[in-house]
Length: 405
Ligand SMILES: *Cc1c(COP(=O)(O)O)cnc(C)c1O
Ligand SMILES: [Zn+2]
Image 1 (cartoon, rainbow, N blue to C red):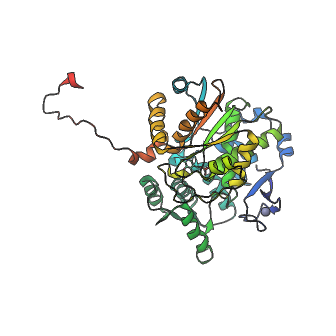
Image 2 (cartoon, rainbow, N blue to C red):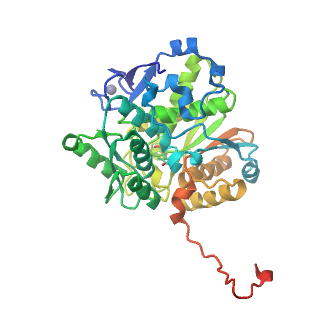
Image 3 (cartoon, helix red, strand yellow):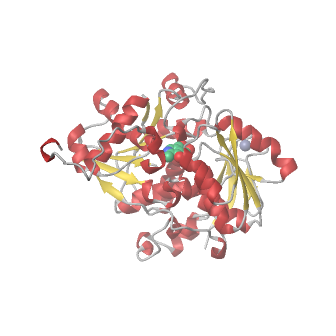
C-alpha cells in the first residue's frame, strides 16, 4: 500500500512523524510535505504497473498517504479525461492544445481529489469531526466525502458563494455557515474554534494530505501522455495547491526515473480582481502580500493570500513559467468560447486559463507549436447564476412562424 515515511517542512526542512496527526510546521508555521520511500516504490513498481488498475486517483496508492486501503473514501475521483482541443486550438492559433477536464469528477470540481485524500487520512487517524473554510467547492467536496465516511462537518463560506455549493453542503448534512467576508475571514473562524469545538481543520496546506490528492493531476498528465510532459501547463491559481502538487508529482516521477527531460513551464492565471501571485511574480518577490478588496466571478480564485505562496512562486520560477492576470469579462468570454468550440462547459476558473493563454500567445511566451494543457478545474454547471438569458418563448397553441426561428 502506501510508502509514506514522514513529513518535511517545505520551508525549514524539519521532519515530522507521519503516523500522528500533523498540521503545519511547529517551528515556522509553513506547510508540511509528505515524503515517500521512492527507492522502495521503484523496486516494486514500474510505469507498466498501472495498466488495468482502477480509473481513479487511487491507482497511484503507493505514493498516496493512506496505509490501510479499507480507509479509502472514494467516489470515483480522478483519472479525468485529457481532451484534445483541436477546434479551440485552431481558433486561437495553437496546434497542440489539450484540456484536462476536471468537470467530470464527483462534486463537479477537482477539490474532490484533495478531500478524498484528506478525509481518508482523517478516517485512518480516527478523526470524527471536521471543519473547513472554503470559497464553496472545497466545502462541497468535504461534505460529500465526510458524509460517506460518517463524519460530522462544519463548513464556513462567503455569503456570496455560488448557490450550488451551499446546497450541496446542506444536502449532505453538513453544518453550513455563511460568513460576511472572504475565505480568509472564514479561515480565522475555523482556527479560533478548534479548541472549543474540537474539530480538525481541513484548510488547504494546513492539512498536509489535500496536496497529495491534488498531486495526482500531475501523475495523470504524465501517464496520459505516455510518460512525457507537455511544454506548458496553465493553472487557475487560488491557494495554489494543484500547482504545488503537480510540481511535487513531477519531482517524484523524476526520482522514480519514470519521466525525464525538461519539466513543463508552469503558468499561474489569476483574475485581475485578485492577483497576489501575479503581482509578487512580476515584482520578483518571494512571497505575496495580502490582496485588499478581492473581487471576481471566479470565486475559487478569490484567495487574498495563499499559505503556500512561496511554493507557488518557486515552482513557477524553477519551471521558467510565468503568471498572468485576466479580467472577469475575458473569463466570461472564454467560458463561452470553450463551450461553443469544444462542448466543454468550464467553470470560470477553468476558463481563466484560456483567457490567460490568449495573453501568452500575444506576448510570445507561448509558441504556436508548444503542447499546452489548460486545467478546467470544474464544471460550469455549478455556476449557471453567472448567466442571465433572455430566450424566446413559444406558444404551442398559436401559430409558429418557422421562417423567423
Ligand atoms: C479552489 C479552486 C481553484 C483553485 O485551486 P488551488 O489549487 O487552490 O489554487 C480553481 N478552480 C476551482 C473550480 C476551484 O474550486
Ligand atoms: Zn518549518
